[in-house]
Image (cartoon, rainbow, N blue to C red; front, side, top):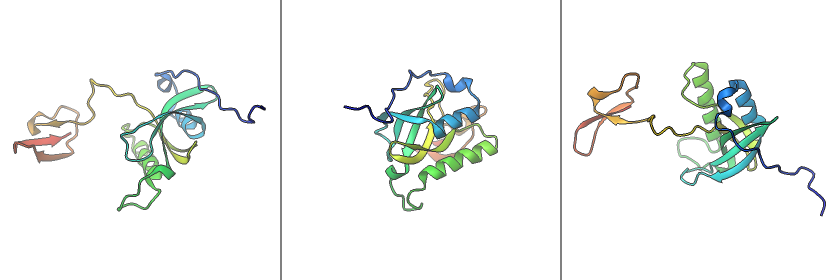
Length: 158
């Protein structure tokens, strides 16, 4: 049997700290133009969402890939726009110098065009969102909204 014209190579083992050593433009280039090797599906996501390795010119980065054709329609947004909205959100945050989102680009993968975002490992010692008493908001945290818990006590989402 002849070898395929474009064999799928297994990516090199992933280096968890690779992205930290690279310039943002390099990370974005690998995500946008790199070959995506799917590692698994994030089953709890409402849209088709895959964990992947993006590989380009010897650089391999772990990422999330959400193909447009795997998007579930929403009543309040046009169909097929989630990937573009996620990329736009990243671009706005970057232009405003808000370092709150990982690099997010529009790329192409095994299921067609979609959003490709650098994977960020969860840090169990660093909560990203929390409910606290309004008077106990930690320094540097932003109040998102105030509400009441199931015992009718005031809480703040931070």
